[in-house]
Length: 327
Image (cartoon, rainbow, N blue to C red; front, side, top):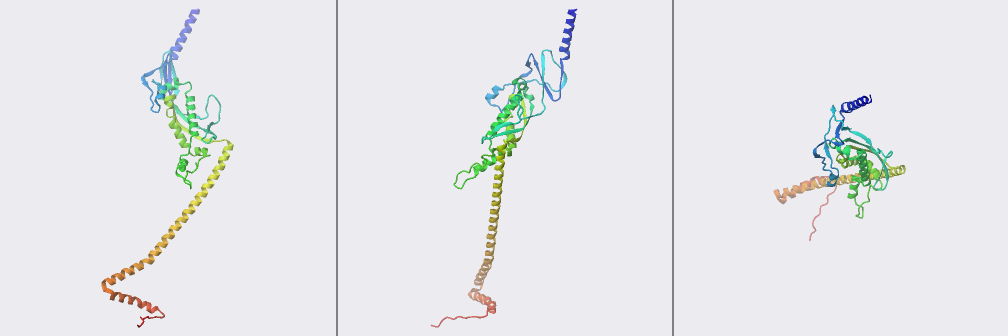
């Protein structure tokens, strides 16, 4: 009786293990790999390659390509095989996610030693090209990617300078010929706020190799807020107000100066035109006299001058004739 029960239980276990659990399916948003006695099925000797990694990193992240099972099923596996599934759709996670602690913001120090909070999200997806790194490279791939992202982000914030502000400093000189003081000094948080798209682009470029390191592709970095402590925020508000007022005064003074310059140019043009209008008849008269003298001689010139005097004599109230004195 005991032997029969044992054989019956063994048969049930074999049926469950070999036949029922031997079949599996893969959803449309999933990919799967098979391990036999813990070893994943590989595609020969094909290895993962990424040009963004240097020689030392390529030797460290030396992962083989695995045989990937796409959506469908049912598929069959042997009892000594195990199926590992993962979702490959794009997912979003907050920057503050950390399995080891609870936090509402990520702290970072700016180049002027101000502690600020950074918030946002990143979009990622598991790389089908490097499932070995995701499953077997590290214990928690997402945690490693987040740590890598945060470290790069903090390094960038600590050295960030507004490109436009830097160009202004480079092109501006003081009255004594020296370089102008840095316009963005003390307001690096403002520079970060104004250049969030630039910061996001930089983070995406720096994290393009995460798929080769950890098997996770960074789809987009969405840093949306830079929040300093309240006392620092109040000081920055005062600085911004002052700078805006100074900028408005500079714009007004520049507009007045440009208006004065324009009016001066117009006055010069008007004076030049008036002078040219007065000189033109004189030039025309001189050319006429030259032509009369060249064609008729001195007598014709004297006759022309006498004829010009007739209208003047008619308008004159008194005529005085002078003669040469007798010797």
